[in-house]
Length: 128
Image (cartoon, rainbow, N blue to C red; front, top):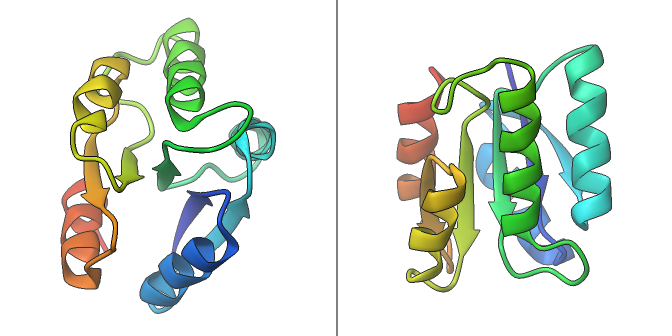
């Protein structure tokens, strides 16, 4: 079973994503940027994530800042861009993907979430 970190400040969104993925992945949750970075850093020490689903619009540290922090951390560790942990942006705004792509995200899924599209995009990044 794969490990996926779901980062979203909205409880219902986190639960919806977990329900969609319940048969294919063990999901951990982060409700804000601070929790996301802590979970990511902890995963590097014991059991890394297979993929991160990352909301962009969050109070405090937003998804783009989290994405940049993770990619900077990978760069410092010598991991080339494109070979780090797959990150799929979850957003209601398609235009935000261009900005996220420039920071190194791998793909995006639009809200409201279509379960088939989400699973297909995850399968493209990891083998489920």
